[in-house]
Amino acid sequence: MNKIILDNKEFYYQVFFKKTKNVYLKIKAGVITVSAPKKYKTNDIEQFIIKHQEFVLKHLNIVKSPLYSLVNFPLFGRVHQIIRSDGKALKIEENFVYIPEKFTDKKIEDFYKKVTVDTAKELVEKELKYLLKEINFQGINFKSQLMKSRFGSCNIRTKRINLNSILSRFDIKYLRAVLIHELVHINEANHQNGFYDLLLKYVPDYRKLRKELNLIIKTYEI
Image (spheres, rainbow, N blue to C red):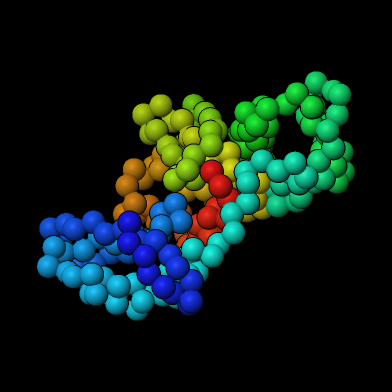
């Protein structure tokens, strides 16, 4: 592991030499990772990192919040104060959420999964099946799980839509956008012109919402 000084602070970086013409840089697990052609020397790589110092520092300085807090419970953009209880079920009342003492993180995530699926179904029943006239909603089923790298997926053959349960922590507009994205896949399998024509017809600011979502999710430890 190599070291480099940026903004008077010491950071680690690692280099992977590959058969490539270009240099690529990313931040992974708090480490600067560079993919470079074999001809590149240490000085070349460090100059490349320094050139992209603003990007590097921005991503390294993101303070990540734990996914499960002992104090706050985010639900669709609203933060509830956690109160530990003697009950057997998680219960929400106004600004408070009552969580049983024996509840594990898995139990809490199970709640988020259920809320994600229930809310997706509600959006479909109350709005989307009337809005998205091109989509055949018959047979569509929903699932939710916590995912590190995807917000959703769609199995066109089984018409199963899988949604990331982390979405239920954020404003509902993000779940709605991701849900419509996956519903459009029922008609358009690939991300080609036809797909984006239909998606942007119903979510004109989809790219803006997706960019915001990508930034938000980076603030959590998953």
